[in-house]
Amino acid sequence: MTTRPRIVVLSAPSGGGKTTIAKALRDQFPDRFGFSVSATTRKARSGEKDGVDYHFWKPQEFLRGVGEGKFLEHAKYGHELYGTLRSDVEKILASGRHVLLDIEVQGAEQVRKLDPQALTIFILPSDPRVLIQRLVKRGSETPDQIQERLERATYEIGKATQFHRWIRNDDLDEAVAAIMKTIEDPEKFGREKHDISWLNSYLNQLKEALYQQKG
Ligand code: ADP
Ligand code: 5GP
Image 1 (cartoon, helix red, strand yellow):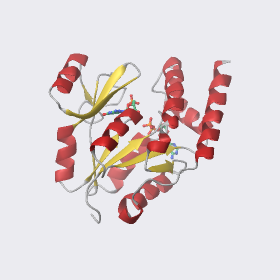
Image 2 (tube, helix red, strand yellow):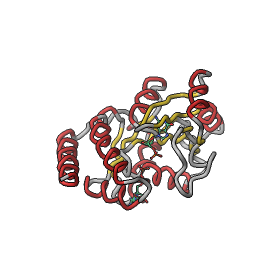
Image 3 (cartoon, helix red, strand yellow):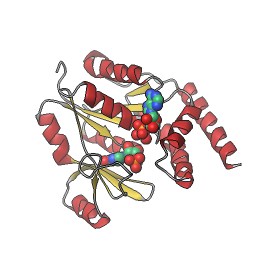
Image 4 (tube, protein in one colour):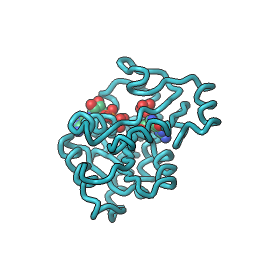
């Protein structure tokens, strides 16, 4: 560990690659990263394990957790609740590792307010059509859910300017290397100057692709 452990938030529209990148970081650097397993009220996808991918909680259990202050942050996504457990985050930081949070944009905002040392990263493939293709190809959502997630993506991309860094996820190894470089170089820590015109053009292309899909 060359830098002191911190919270590293990975956010992206659905299909952007945050789960894949978080896994690659843990697999390649197990002594540097721990992953905070979130609680959610959504149902497990095929292959997902309770306690590994998520803690799959009933809504009552989740709301009790909120009342008991168990969450560092929590938010609603679609029709479901998702939250980061304080206990997980504290355990990983105490072990001297960075803690990876794979969370959506409202949660990222809460973390930024709570912890000024947290590094927040927004991930996107360079081409919005690739985002759609990857989400569709993953095959974990129904066509209606995919449509909902892509519509939400336009809102999420609008929040990208609040993040410290944008990482393009075209080649996985390059995306992982870019994240490592950012984390290991505290000199460069701080909000980068974002290319807003690129983001606007991305949003327009995504909206156009969505419109064509609907038609
Ligand atoms: P998210 O967690 O942001 O919803 P995932 O990590 O599930 O996104 O990635 C969406 C899909 O895209 C998955 O099927 C994943 O295997 C694939 N994927 C992610 N990153 C890449 C990449 N760099 N190159 C090719 N496919 C990728
Ligand atoms: P999915 O259902 O695809 O696993 O996740 C849906 C969204 O919820 C993704 O954007 C994911 O990053 C986000 N998410 C997962 N866990 C948490 C969490 O603990 N808190 C927040 N705010 N969002 C989360």
